[in-house]
Amino acid sequence: MAGGPWPAKAIVARVCVSRRWDPRMKPAAGDAERLICLCRTGFETECALESSALAATTGIDGQPHFESGSGYTEFAPAAPPPSAAWRQLADWRNHIFARECLTAFAVLDGLPRGDRLTPILRALAERGEPYADVWVEAPDSDDGKALAPFCRSFGNALVGGLKKSALLRAGAPRRLHAFFPQGDKVYLAAVEPATATPWPQGIPRLKFPRNAPSRSTLKLDEALLVLLDDDERRRGLKAGMSAVDLGAAPGGWTWQFVQRSIRVTAVDNGPMDPALLQSGLVAHRREDAFRFRPGKPVDWMVCDMVEQPRRVAELVARWLAQGWCRRTIFNLKLPMKKRYEETQLCLDLIRAQAAKHSGATLTLRARQLYHDREEITAYCAVSG
Ligand SMILES: C[S@@+](CC[C@H](N)C(=O)[O-])C[C@H]1O[C@@H](n2cnc3c(N)ncnc32)[C@H](O)[C@@H]1O
Image (tube, rainbow, N blue to C red; front, top):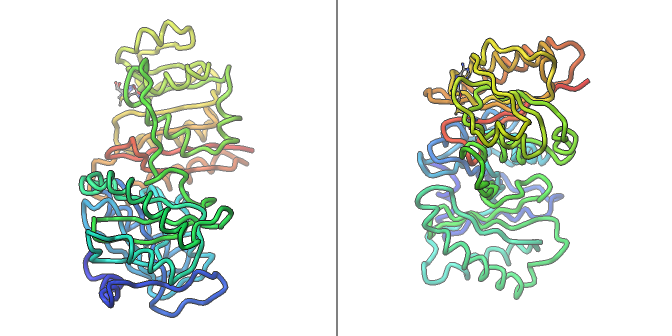
């Protein structure tokens, strides 16, 4: 982590703790929390660019730091930020490339391998905040995966230590996160569950359904779970609804709709899974997805074509602007260098084009899902 002011400060007794646990107390300058964002390895640049851009829009000045391939980034505010802006920046739902956002109040470096617990408990006791729960996490990198067994056992030890210190309390407003980017370093963070991802590392653990025709099915499964709220899922995924799947073969995305008794027009020149076709809910159209027009408006259009992201964005915008669908989930492949810029460009294009859909309110959310590779997935809906 090149040149960050925080690790340097932490060399003093190897511990740097912000005493800001009472939200009414103003923290001393230079003692501000840091934002830690967990992301897919190789996407640290995009994650850091995004944190900086979001910080700028909320009026927070600061510096991002990261190491390529580490699976996380750090954003250090130049001064303790206003709490409303900080909460907005730390809300994982406002990020595309961050799977989880942690507001870290301390970093402990050079932890002794023989006893990592004592210095951590000392720092927590000094701070004095009680927590409702504890998560011990590592990045989703090769180094981080090697730490998984340690994280599991250390979690039990930390819970035991917090109980003894009376710092684990049901009903406490925040959850403690101990994030180990490496075995001898930990970030301690406190998060409010309501604005934090409900999955450790921001990764929903989904099981591949045995009879689904492709692993891509997990991408749409995750998108429906992560990009929609409970109400949107209940109202938007009803038996008897209709969908168009552009670039559908062999049918992993179509399968998700068929499971929910939603009729699908699957557009692809490639072959569809025969079992799906036998379901009676799927019509296969061997056509070019860019020329295809639905006979009448449908509830959903989904698209997982390996295509230039701008072409896909234009296609999505056309479907929304023409009123051919009310909701869409689509994948934007990002094989280019300027992936963050391309993402913004595509989403802006959709916002601008779909605004032409007179009187409509647009919801647009995008994320790099766990099951996404060099790509992101987005949900867009018009209402009104
Ligand atoms: C990544 S695969 C889709 C996988 C699918 N979502 C699943 O879950 O099984 C991309 C598909 O897009 C199709 N495709 C690419 N360009 C297309 C086009 N212009 N029109 C129709 N299909 C297209 C390809 O034939 C391929 O089957």
